[in-house]
Amino acid sequence: MNTQLKVLLLFNAIMFLIAAVLEWQYYTAHERAEPQTDYSRSDLISIHARTKSPLVDLDELHRSFRKKIPEPVNISLGTSLIPRQGARQAQLVRIRGDGSGGELSNAAVILFCYNRTEYLGKTLDSVAGLDGLDRVTVYVSQDGQDTAVADLVQQVGRGALAPPHTSFFEHWQRDRIPQLGPNQPGHAWLSQHYKWALDRAFLEEGHSHVIIVEDDMLFSPDFLHFFESTAVLLDHDPTLWCVSTWNDNGLKSYDWDPVRMLRTSYFPGLGWMMRRQLWLELSPHWPKQSWDHWMRLNTTAQGRECVYPEVNRNRNIGEKGANMNSQVFKQYLAQMSFNQELMKDYGDLSYLLDTEYERQLVALSQDAELRSLPIGTRGLTKGKVYLALYTSESYPRTARKLGIWPFPRGHYHFVTCLPVKGAMLLLADQRFCPLLPDQLRLTPKEGLKAVPAAQHESCHAACRHIEMECNQHEFWFINSCEELSKHFPCQEGCAVELGNDVPNYVNDATLGSHQTCLINQKEPKCAAANPSTQRLCPCVPKV
View 1 (tube, one colour):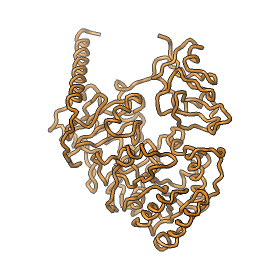
View 2 (tube, one colour):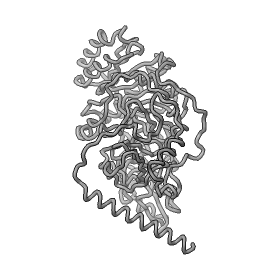
View 3 (cartoon, rainbow, N blue to C red):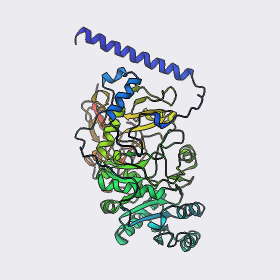
View 4 (cartoon, rainbow, N blue to C red):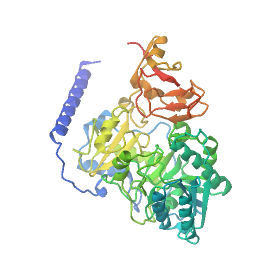
């Protein structure tokens, strides 16, 4: 390495340290609240053109933007996103987002319920008030025989949900028989109920699309119009497998646009739609528990994504439920945006097609300023784009400052877009975002080997047996169903679980997760050992 290059690298390192110190001083010196300022999204260089506008030449738009704001120094260092290798190229066609294609001519809404009449009554009233309800069939699928629930459903079925208010209405009741034993968890009952009702809707009733809601939701006036307008995307783009009305990051405090939509690699659920073709694929493998986590596995999603609105089209009112508690509800769900306007036309939706969406996101990042973590909403300049790199270990601290979930949701290939105070904040995972250039990515340590441990054996011990050592930060590179399946039979497939000994394979026949491979959402510990499981360990050469 010549002397000039060494000096340049040393200079860049010093400047980075100075910037980090100045940023730390800023945040520690300015903890007082800032005055609230409202900015229009029209001032922001958006990911896509505005609704009802012709397609924009983003290259020209960014050239215009750079005339006002100097080119950041970090652009020359390769800090912007790049297209994925082998990304599919397709001719861009205009897709009308007004539902005029008639794709939902044979659609059904299934409302899943159990025993919560106080929530169910509000949800039924909200369904009954939806515009366009006369064009869909409505099923209320009840798990069990609770008479109060049945009486309420039948009363509404004879009135507000009876034809001609709906195309057709029917009340279903499922015999509540546990498939994982009498003490199975609440999410297992829900997963088994889903399987029963979706089989009936798609395989027996022959519907082309099903919109799935639960008994603790309220709906925006355009809830059905949103699905009618976006169903066409599922026909045009094989990389899409669902449409959801839920934005996991859709806090009221952000600058979300009620007309615009995004793509996500993280299955959102909560008021969503799928096609019959997808159910024919999923039904034979549908899990007996934790169905939503199963949908988020790579082996299930197979790289497919969902479309969702920037502003939520449903509001969750279920403070307590199978997968909810009061603290989580108040901290996250109660803070979410909720559209209350009737919209019927969402403009040209071609920006949501896979290749075009990625192209516009990459173009947006060309003007990004690299920021260190943790990053909050203070100190951001209106009209600028910021790129912050995170790891699974560092994400929770930044999430607390931003008010979002403590693990990444609503991301597109591990890039999360947050419009805040007239700026755009991009959060990218250094390990798993394929859009990051090589110099910004974290890769596995040289010599990393995934090693199955014996039952009730720690990863420290498993790695010592082969004269290697366990490295806790390398767990993320082996924390997948694909990797587990190389080492264990995984007869019952994979599921998501929190635990210091996960990822693992469950050997204990007394557990409902017997013969299941588990992956983690938090960093495991090398020292952990569980008498019911065999761990998968990240072993690296000893230093």
